[in-house]
Length: 269
Image (tube, rainbow, N blue to C red):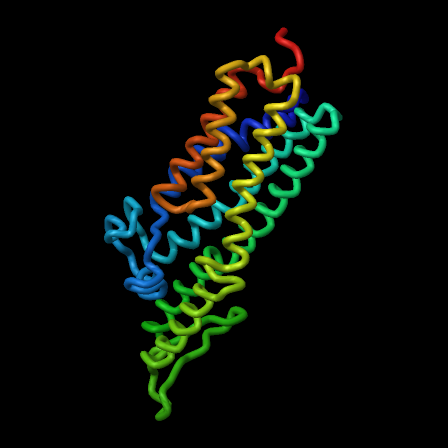
């Protein structure tokens, strides 16, 4: 943890407040819907009680949008706080420095690829689903402040998206969701981001383990480091309910124990 008061406040936001925020919202982040009933079919409607897909509840595409609007900056805040932790622990010794740089690189990749993942499969997807639902029922839309009417081939007012057009949109979105590069599951960006958070947590823990300032925490320090690594592993597995809330909860435990024991100091005073 950094010594400067302003950086310490940022650290507290990132490793105590941030994880608590994510624990609370990820309880309402469903999972396991890609195959059954399918991403588009599941996410475009409210599903009370999560409908067998892990989450306590799912409130519809507007919630999917809001969830990821909160999740994206909070994840980045946690990343910044972990980098501050590593910086404070970097004593300049060769082993510590190598581990610290490995942690920084992994955490940077985590922030980059999770932001990309959330932008495509969270924020952008949520708004797209909302627009599809609206255009399927409305007979006009607004573009650049102008109301544009929707009509059928005979010039009669009609929904802006027909059933056939909605089916086409669903096909494109489902294919994007499972795309090997940018998809929400099993893609390059999702796998890279997931493994980056684990290695970021692991290398951060190893940096702290070999640094002089953290050794004096004794068994409490070991528990804190185990919580950090365990949290990184669980978030790597899934940030959705219920693995994700548990993982972020362990990161919260790490933050609390480190703060309580002043594990950032190089002496016991």
